[in-house]
Image (spheres, rainbow, N blue to C red):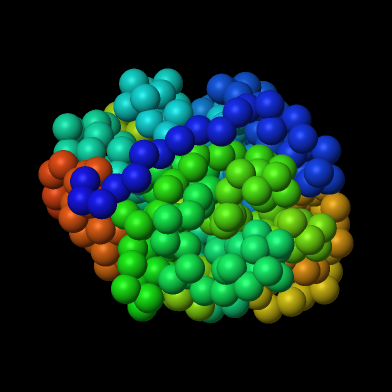
Length: 362
């Protein structure tokens, strides 16, 4: 990889410090944990509900899952949702390919596209997070002391410095490079440090890193507690960037397409409730959605939902395919993705299109 720096992993001991520093936010535990959401079939249902094994990350971008379960939208479709908690979307790929999960929510990556090129069995079927205008839930942060000392004023000053991100080969890499390009530099000119979002605070405080690519609610917490200053949000540098998706296991798609369509009806109904709450600012729905998310995600401070940038969730569920192609162009040029994939063979909009036929336009 031309000009690439070694990606380093700082000590996991910082995680303990991070949990104490970023109050009200607890990262998902390592590996996966299983819990069952008991959604009994409606009283007039003839058949028992169909079980769907769903991989979740427990973040706000899972709003379409959690709102739908809490409000009974999946139950209305005759579905019983069994959630499996993961600490990263990358860990869902193998269980989806093996048929151990039916569906899941995570982010595309160079690794996922490499797996798709090898014929791994999964489909990208719906949006789960975009940086649409006003929804820049990802951001570039600078260490406050470096800014106040005048050493770090813009992305051009990051050359040769240490920048944290949760994982290499993800959409965060793409937007960091885009921030640096106007200053005659790029991703290969920084030293990338892989750190969980919760570890950014102690690393910034100690000077172990100079900048961080973070997501909400960590962005708001890091600025509030003066670990960092906000340079810019992702919707300002790359509006409409496709960040996260809903995946279906290919065997599930072929064997139970009708169940997949019913699942999507419930998911988009919940996403539209979310948009009523946080896009159209319906007071009652905002209050209810906030209560659901505080119960089901690590963001337990309800006041954060009034101040942080919420993810953009497409009410028609369709993915920004040109954005996905731009990301794979970047990873191909960088050498982290070996083979171009035909996204028409990986993206399947038939489920969201069928759901919109049921629900009507938003």
